[in-house]
Image 1 (cartoon, rainbow, N blue to C red):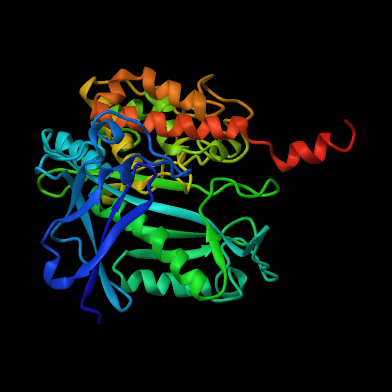
Image 2: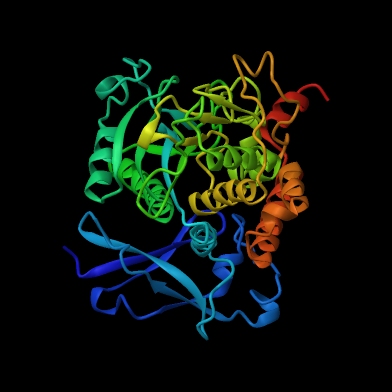
Length: 422
């Protein structure tokens, strides 16, 4: 195994940054220009006080976090927390944002636990974006029925070797779309695993001669790709705090207020769960994607689903997020919304019964664009209070600039639709 270690951290877009360092130097802080944290996908600097030109492009430090080291093929990877060069915590650190929410839960004697179901498309090519042909496709297919190239099985095998805790892999409803489930663990470890899985899956796919995308809805003739988050809470004894066997539905008061908090912050949560302009081509009725602000008992047409399993496996599944979401920011926002419900003792409305798309029991739903979702987040002072103000300010500005580029773009559709007749 190589004597080098990749020390990684996610930016506010959920993308990976880091350095490869000698193993003997893993406990030495590595230095970066802090501007790496305030760039959008256009790679332009965001002029934000304390973080960019106006502050002279100061350094930041990435400090390896004990307990995060894992095997990664012929090398190892570890995760870092971010600081200013003088040692102050960096407010724009999405892992730190999740840690802060977890610490708030610990004040209630509870530990957030989560696991992810991650959908993505296997691609034959990127120019143009082309689905991988799967002649033997079937729903919940495995082997050639999921991926004739064997890449999916290789991804699962490599991820398991990297201790990402894979529960299983299979094809989804659309040919070339697949799903990988990651086992539940404490919320930080789980978010790290989801973040690393996206990196690993692409590395393995490209080495195997194909590609993948976690994009929300890459094809207009197919469903979108979700990243469902399954959540629970453990008390000091390790018991699942969502359980109340005396309740009709087996749910504790904490569970009910948690779900009520998710529904209360439904629109603002979209800014983290649907973080791209493309996300809102998935967040529509008929996609089983978390459009309505509702909950249900084992009902997949609800945004918040309580699966049928009870006892120690009782959990809350949130179905709004897509594969482009930052696992750390998303998980922080979901547990913050749930904590808001618990701290305010919110009352849970009646569950959705049957098809929410044809007979919803609410008129509240996700915003219809990223721009509207960002406005909803900015207006939700309660949810924002669980995050450092700098993080919210920078995240909103990065994403609003992204929206601006979309509005200004001339698309192939516009050219094909109008240039031939006007």
